Image (cartoon, rainbow over all chains, first blue to last red; front, side, top):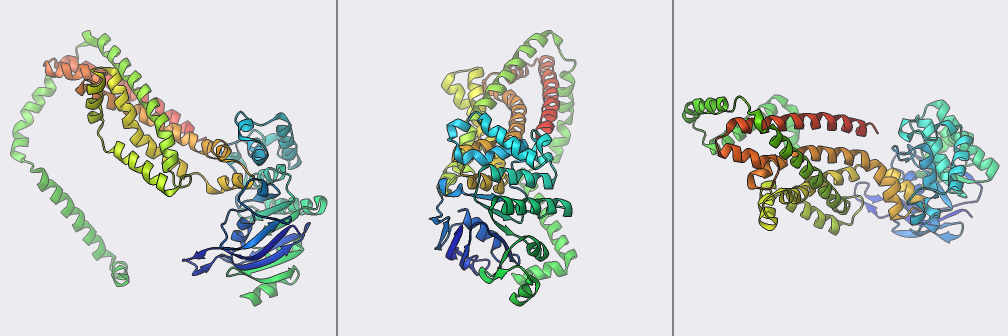
Length: 238
Length: 262
């Protein structure tokens, strides 16, 4: 099992008058492509952030590949994450942003004066794979939204993760760029057997790419199953 | 409270009039506190014009002294700003909401406020008493004075860092030092350098004031000429200062624009 959530609950939120996650239990198998769906405030992004230890839990257990998730560095290495908008450092060149994905594997003294040549070659290869070799030395802030998201994917992949979490990776992208990003995620799943969990708002995209959908409402799972006929499932949950 | 705010929204004209009256009242209150004597102001006008006329023409014989003192002022500002910038960095990190725990923020903010509440001239007096007359006292005073401002500016620059970019580094397993080097520093550096340049430019003017209490720089000579009724020499000092401040202002504006575009 790649991800196991047992009765996850976050601290009480005064604005929502409930915990953001309110007893989430689910299991995601290795190699699955899962879409997390739900209305705004349902808890999708919080669940994803909890999976990488960015959200403190009030109760419940979260296991990644059978190991309980903690806030230490090692437990995070198996999981890569794509943030909404990329979460990149706009002032750094694309290649430096990709190399930042290696930080967890290198001691601080080694990265004080830059990254090893081997890692730089790896970063260039990844950027070339996503059609960004010529933009490697360009400041990330000068790249288009789609290019930035591809740099973010390259940064996640340089970690060599077994699981990739994506928080609304296509928000703000045009149709072509969004399709490009979703196709990359799909290829990573089908060709490399990577476990993908992606937060989406578009039901048709979820049906087109994901095998399984988990629908959240008010911090609870209201649907967990196949991706077909999602429209009716969603209507019922509201 | 709810009824009160809905009243404000329903009658916008009354609310604007109320605000206008409040502003007029505040200014009236401040003016009566000043106890301005309009007759005295009118009678003093001939003295003001006489003083201004006596400043002209500038005495260029002391141009070499003015330039030497100006160089000393720039040297004081350069070192004062650098000392202040170095000391401001840890204080800014400790007072930043997104980096330090609450108790440390409180202590660092208290220190910043304490430094900011001491005027530069008081710091000048303090260091003149400690190290004697001259530029070293002024440089140290500028260094401490700078902390109060750069500490706050750096803190705000650190707090404006994109939180998602920092979280993405945390997820990759980066250590605190690596996050600071690759996440915070690149985002803070352009803004921080811009603020430091502004402070350098500001400190040249502040260094001129410090000369009044004997803490070196161009202000020291300026005050001596005014006290000795050598107004034309004082004019030369002020003109040299004006030219240099304008040049540095133009140069640092250009540099700041470039940094902001980074």
